Image 1 (tube, rainbow, N blue to C red):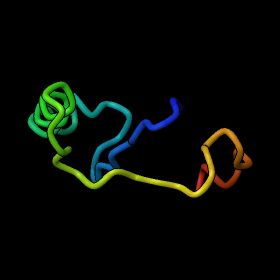
Image 2 (cartoon, rainbow, N blue to C red; image 1 turned 45 degrees about the vertical axis):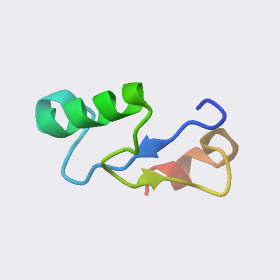
Image 3 (tube, rainbow, N blue to C red; image 1 turned 60 degrees about the horizontal axis):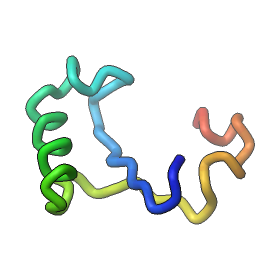
Image 4 (cartoon, rainbow, N blue to C red; image 1 turned 90 degrees about the vertical axis):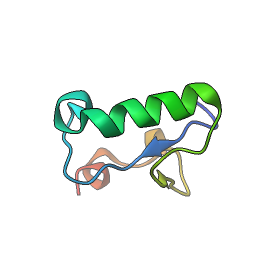
Length: 59
């Protein structure tokens, strides 16, 4: 991930957010591009994802 990046957690969506939740995807992208708050709370972790063991990422 990029420093300062946020990753909104979308319940009920898999790897294809555009296909699973198209309206939410469009709102999130539009909000990001306009510098507005995202329509979802961001997922945040104390440690960057690359510093955690892969098996913990799968739970």
